[in-house]
Image (cartoon, rainbow, N blue to C red; front, side):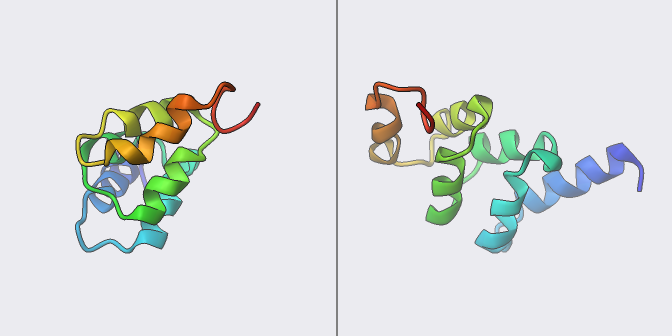
Length: 89
């Protein structure tokens, strides 16, 4: 499968409202490319996916989640008040 077709397929999956949480969590993996950033910033996400994104080692994914207007700000408070770079010291 060509790279651009794969990326479009993953983005479509990331924004599919019927996609289950375990599939969306797998899309947070760096191997999924830009789908994680777009998904974390642009759609309502189930709780387990928000949890996975909050624990993600890539700051860009966590930053995208922080810009998501669908995520309850209270869910974002723990990383914002942690004195160490989240999630690792």
